[in-house]
Length: 321
Image (tube, rainbow, N blue to C red; front, side):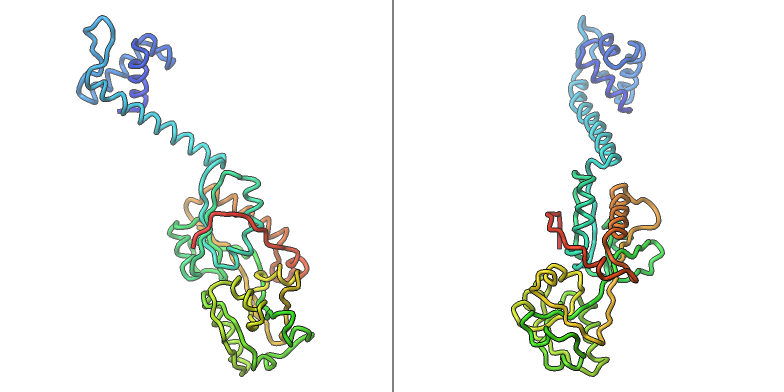
């Protein structure tokens, strides 16, 4: 059974004549007649009663007409949707990212992406860093953002942002006015950590251990926004990625306390499949992020002023935990 045969059958049924049906589909009457005959042979029963003065559908023909309409409608819908994907007028892009990328880095590139492709839906999903590479390989997500370059040969990675961990405190904190401090000055301070970001928490604890200083943790929270709020309320100090506090540092609601020994870089890599199919939606987003990185984000060796010029843009996007 071919879709063209169904189209010819439907034209004959709706026009009530092989002649008018042939004119409708721009074929000869003989070609339409042969097409319908082949369809009847495939089904094994006549679809039209030809022994009547006027052409009429048989019982099988009446049953077939609704199915033919649905199948042709599905064909038309498929052609339309594929065409929209090719012209990027519809579609769904899925991204897996760690928190600081999802909340603080991607808003700028997404604004540029939505400006170019306003009808594309983007889903950003918070995932564990150790899970993201495999999920991108398995096509659960189109693109991932991670903190370390993955070892998988199936993935391509691009360094898109270089950040550093900084010590933040309330402007009222006793250390806030100091030009710089030593890690030993933190021995009696209370600390707030992001418990959901285990690799970062482990690095912070190793930093204190390496300098023989106790890190007194008074609160373990599950988001950088919560950590910032606790610090602003004078609950304690915190070591966080600089990108997460750009707005607060600019507004003066938090301060960057310089620690002489603190040297903890934090990179973000964009990863995507290096082999097989990568959708046009994903390729366009990769291009947007790469261009945005060149124009706005700081990489290793760039100036801090260039990096600090970026401020998160608040935009509603489809996100899921």
